[in-house]
Image 1 (cartoon, rainbow, N blue to C red):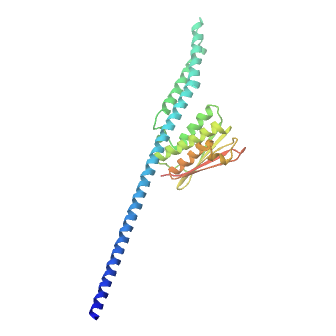
Image 2 (cartoon, helix red, strand yellow):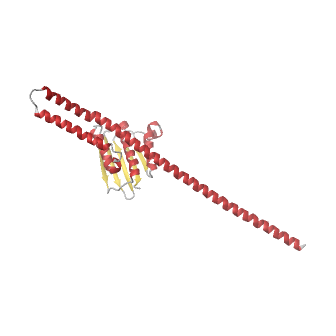
Image 3 (tube, rainbow, N blue to C red):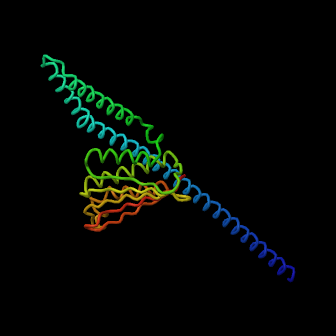
Length: 262
């Protein structure tokens, strides 16, 4: 009888041991599967983020190209076309006179020369690598000069700190954010001045774009009119930075963009 009781205890211990072993193995399998799933989900998230970043980069390139073409079309029509029309009038006057007017001829030559210079500048802006080959500050200055030359408003840029090179893809998206901010100001703010400030810090760049326009209520960001401003903030997050927009009715708007260099 004692032997049977002893055998029963051994049997129970074996069952308990097997049960504990199975539980431990099950837990290990569960933990492995859980972490594999988390790893797979993390990998999927990274792939999705990379895909979204690539999409944003492509959209930025296309939008910059579209903006460039619109600018070129406007400049050819408003500037080069008018200069060449003036040169044509001057040459017609010379042709109608019996005596060669050297002063008028020189004016016509200057007009043609000015048109050629403008066309050279336009040809340079057609290069898709212009943004990559320029610093972000220089590219922004070029955009502000174009706005000022068009007589739209006064626009200036200042730089604080030593310039730091920004990764090309990131620079392209930041430039598009700046370009989009400037277009929003021109279209909606009724401002007469734009001030852009670049501040180069140790690990990041801060860019502020301020205007003296009519401003708006921050609740507009949630509405239809705020989609462009929301796009600015989304793109800043996409490159590991952030954008803040401060505005009050009658007090203008200030957009601050912060981004790491790499």
